[in-house]
Image (cartoon, helix red, strand yellow):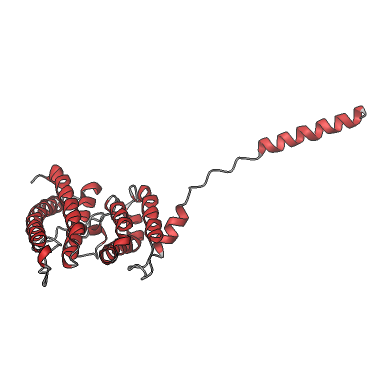
Amino acid sequence: MTNVSRMICVILWASSLAATAQTPPTPPQPSGNGQWRNELKGLPEHPAAGTSVQDIDRFTQNVQLAAPYFATITPGDFEANREMVRRMWAYVMALDMMAGKNPALRPAASRARRAMNSFPIGFAMVQPPGSPQSGALADPPTPQKSSGPPFAMTAPHVENIPAGDRATASDLSSRYTSTAARAASAWQNVETLRQSLVSRGMTLNAATAASVGRLQADMDSASRSLTARDWTEASASLDRADAEIEKISKTVGR
């Protein structure tokens, strides 16, 4: 190779290095953000009849991916996503009913329920404006009078219970009534605090609002499970409600 050829190669090599240095690196893209959003926005309110364990676990994964985003959203972001989150809660509640009739789906449905129980936006926060449990992220202009807890205070009446299940059903019904009384007290304390905050132009903190939402969902789940004679899920729902009552009580008192 002649000196001229070597010189040309060196110049081309140097030019290549300079071009590479001037090309800015491609910034990393958020992983999976669009995918979970698209799937949750298209979520039906009721699972299809052929919903599988894999379908439920996919939903659970999307909820877990969405949680960090919803933990830091503004009130405007919340309103823009209210319908999507409402569908998520409706879907997991319908899963509870489906799993009550299909034991094979229960573990996956329980995973989905745990994911939603940990979700930053509780069920009560996505109720239609004007309902007693709405307004967790939005400031109403004036406090509104409470119309009572947003869940049944007594266990549902279930007829024709098999003799072998009657003792269990009776115990769970009594437990539901006891838990509902404590839940109502916690709910009323939160409502009193919320109205006090609203009168001062402030809002309830997201963690407490989320606990109230999960408490309502757990009490509703317990009632539905008793009606469906799913004693195991009814007991688990009441356990979750007890845990939320303790969280709320630490914040607002008993």
